[in-house]
Image 1 (cartoon, helix red, strand yellow):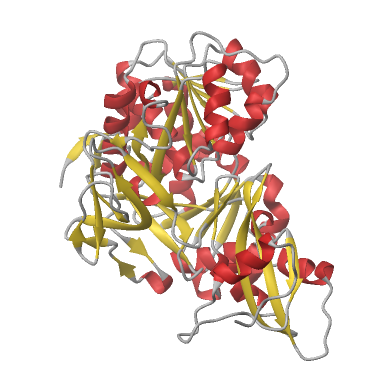
Image 2: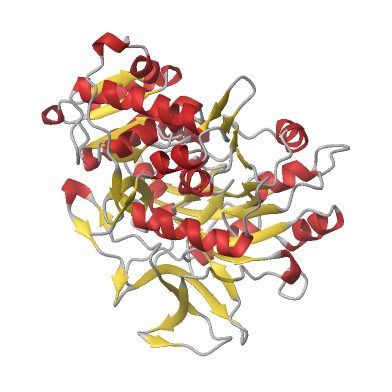
Length: 504
């Protein structure tokens, strides 16, 4: 057990008057943030939240959300960060898997919460509480629960669900140790300046957003918080708040560059771009505009970025994600053997920022480690200087607007339709989202299933970003002798603009 001072307690003690959270209508210092977190903590104790319980959050990017996440650290509760873009059915599955008896939510998601409550297992006894109610009790009704003065770095802090290659969501466990070493690795790479300010427009339910919340507390720098990504608003606040750092995905960077007449302030020194490789044409545009792009590679399992390419290598190491952060190691393997440089294989990562494991269905835990190494399932190679080049984020993975979309998940839901006999899904390029899924379906003989009907069926069961852009009806889904879908044939027919599939 490694005990360290509680992150927020220590930051509020060291620099109480430094700004912590900035929005259009809110300015909180670290002292204010701690006060709000303790206010929520007392209410949580009053309601009966217990140490070690999983507590689900369905919240947006708000100061109160940040205060609640910190509040739960005082109780040693594990935060289950629910993706607000998911369909109710998907959220129900995650709450059931996490065995969470508590759900705190923004009032804007009330309708979805009603569906969640009707779908979760009765034995959970799920209690749903609107976020604002945690900060509405009078002081007289507060329980005054004991403050936690230290953190055990080995404790789980969060459970973030990410779809696996089978399409079934699994919870990635993130500990305080993971957050700490992720923050240390990042600051040793990017540096820290007194005037630093981090603009957060990525959602806090993503590891990229959650990591900024903890880094800002550890570093003692403010977060300029946006409730959603808006390129015009981003440009306004880059100037107004003298922002020095921002995290975006490639499609968001492109939208920023599309803003007419927008300029970038001299204070901006880091634009971290993740969510998949940055296209060459986008790098060229960014270079011409003087945008300090840092290409990154990271996973939920590594508590955000774990490999980063700094601007001085954008030209000489074009297409590379960079080198591992200081406390991380990389290997490329195939068949258990470590490959020499320039050979393509699976990317493996080792370091203290790597998750201790997964929490899957019914609380069963599975370790993703191989002798201390995380097998990412991603494919790439290292050059002779140790720079990483990522070829694919899993062979079949579709990255749409920075979101991971797994074909197997969509296929499984398609096959739930009573008229669908088989289904295959592949990705295709899209100017706005980078990639979007396209579905091929085989239906019962002499049946016709309209695309609108299929999409309506999926819309009730999947998040909007997972919906196929097109649905093609075919005679048969091509599979090999082992029963695996021959996706390359689907891609070929898609490229040819045909709705038919060759039988060869």
